[in-house]
Amino acid sequence: MAQEIDPLGPAFTSWLTEVYLGAGRFDEALVENEKALELSPGWARARADRGWALVGKGRFEEAFVEYQAASENSPRWKTHYGRALIKAGQLAEAGLVLDEVMAVRAEVPAPPLASFQALYGDLDGAMESLEYGYESRSALMPWIGSWYDFGDLVDDPRFQDLLNRMNLELIAKPVG
Image (cartoon, rainbow, N blue to C red; front, side):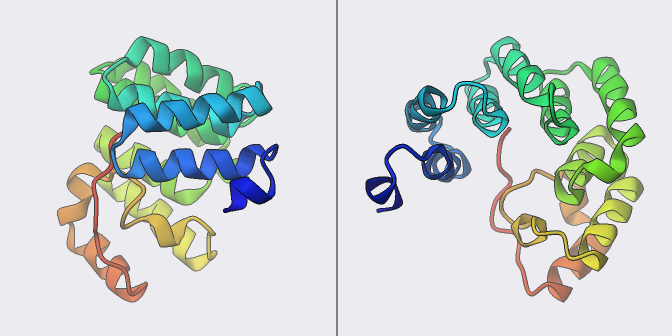
């Protein structure tokens, strides 16, 4: 309905892309994403969404290009790039990206940073980031039960306690 009201607004198309991504429907996400990129070719969110879909399809090299483009003007997307590197088994490169992100930590939302840290194996750092997100009321915190992949952190009692405090439950371990 939002797309019908504002067919030239890339945000609504991007949000639909993310619904498909969260459902693991990567081919459909790529179709919607193409529309968002046509409306706004350089939009970082659309490039990052494309990267997420490509990771879901196992097309890592293409995903890396999208995440690097998304990261040019905002370090927040580097967390997604780092997670993709981990999923592709490129841990050394992911460590370098994590160092870059930590150098500008204040500019990066807590949940994607925590997801990156958790997948990299830094569960304590991930919990520290999530607690900071909780205390500072990060707008992305309500999505931690469904949008972000926290790897082994999901079994950690500290993570379960945080979900309980937020009245959330873990409903998905998304890809990307």
